[in-house]
Image (tube, helix red, strand yellow):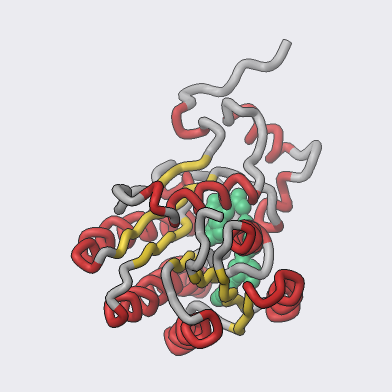
Length: 255
Ligand SMILES: NC(=O)c1ccc[n+]([C@@H]2O[C@H](COP(=O)([O-])OP(=O)(O)OC[C@H]3O[C@@H](n4cnc5c(N)ncnc54)[C@H](O)[C@@H]3O)[C@@H](O)[C@H]2O)c1
């Protein structure tokens, strides 16, 4: 119960890694408000978890929706201690092929959505003088060159910069701002890395632990970062990547 009596908002919590954050936070004693555009899935998850969880429709590209998400957590659960800016989309293809509409959509959800989530949560934490923790979801591609994800790496690079800058701006308010940088993790976003696929084989060769991450493994990092065990960590991105970033060449084929 490392998050007992804490209240968290989690964007993009209806499925995937976001849903794993929701489940684990509730298991650790937190109360959670989910904000997502997948209403049916989000409502079902909140119902399953009982009074500790609530759901509200929230398109993170609209600051008024994000403001309502924060106010819902305050009115339903009576506080606001943690915000996880997790909602995100990915693209395929190259930056050269990517069109302007896709670039704008990517930045609206993956960058502006994180900016709105941090700002709306922090405003309330400052006004209430409670301090808090903002956790942004980045990716290993924030600091790697990548093939085949369009402008997605650009958006995650911006999340790193936002995290560092806000950590500095908000330190005097006792608000820590951190990020998690997952490598390939088994969700709908990685549907093309199915068993037997070339993508999965490539991940296995490029990852010392020779497998993708599981959503629950990202949730464990989020609990640590949200808890007082991480009380001296701010501005950092913690990469949960099975060793991917420290590997130079490919792993050897197993004999
Ligand atoms: N799965 C991976 O391999 C991986 C790796 C690195 C980083 N990430 C990041 O982790 C986060 C979660 O990814 P996932 O794999 O669980 O993906 P997912 O597609 O399963 O879930 C993404 C969630 O975000 C929601 N969402 C999308 N647009 C939204 C909007 N405008 N407003 C509110 N919610 C919106 C979706 O409805 C969905 O519930 C993303 O930020 C992603 O970039 C994932």
